[in-house]
Length: 51
Image (tube, rainbow, N blue to C red; front, side):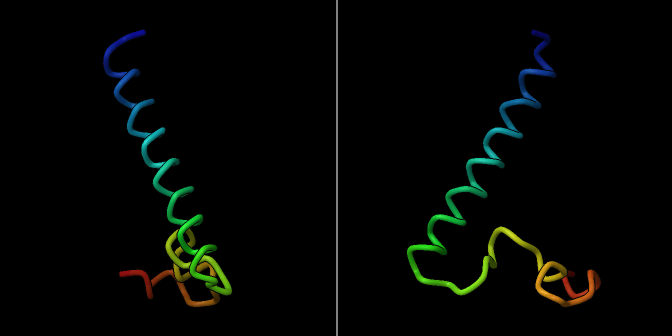
C-alpha cells in the first residue's frame, strides 16, 4: 500500500474513532441529542451558524 494512501486511511480511522468516542461520552452524560457528533445544521440551525 502506498504511504500516502496508508496515511489517509489512518487519519480517517482516527476521525471515525473520535466521533464514536464523542457519541459514547454524550450517551453516558444523558444528552438528549447528539451534539459533538452532529453539527448545528443537523439540529435545525442553518449551516452558517457553524462558523
